[in-house]
Amino acid sequence: MDFNTITQINFVQVNLHHSIAATSTLVQRVKDQNISVACVQEMYHVMSKPVGIPSLCKLFGSQRENLKSGIICFHPDLPVIKVFSATNTIGVTFPYRSSNLLVISVYCTLKEDLYHNLDELENCLMLPHERVLLTGDFNSKSPVCGSDIEDKRGK
Image 1 (cartoon, rainbow, N blue to C red):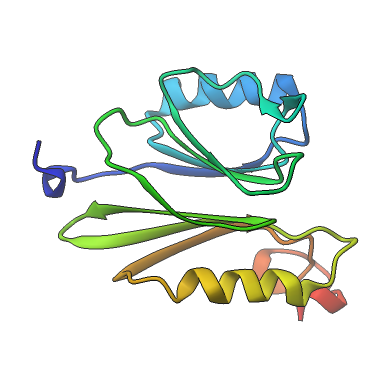
Image 2 (cartoon, rainbow, N blue to C red; image 1 turned 180 degrees about the vertical axis):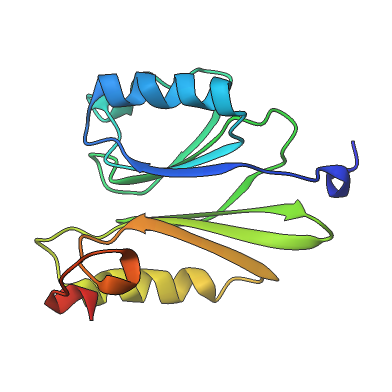
């Protein structure tokens, strides 16, 4: 298959809050809305293994034991390759519209210094790519992201 012929890839970003119900809703939404790739945070897991994601999907997770960030590829023909994995960040690439697309999913915990996440992102962005899609739960408030207030992390 010529992967440059894939004309549309639908993405979703969602924090699942370690919930099996939210995971089930995501799987149903994927079917209903023809979603190709899900960038997720706080996946539901049992004994550090994700639960509720169909086994035919390609799942890539961050290195943290309790699965803070992940990317799930639901499109069976998309040649997704994991290129980066750190504590709170995961990055994959695949060909799309004659270019190399880097997709990043990140989770910024409130308990850790934001600069740790920025270092992970910087390292991931050093990888070769022509286009990038950055998704995540940044645990910050900013009018840029639709919040009525701005906190220290949202500046």
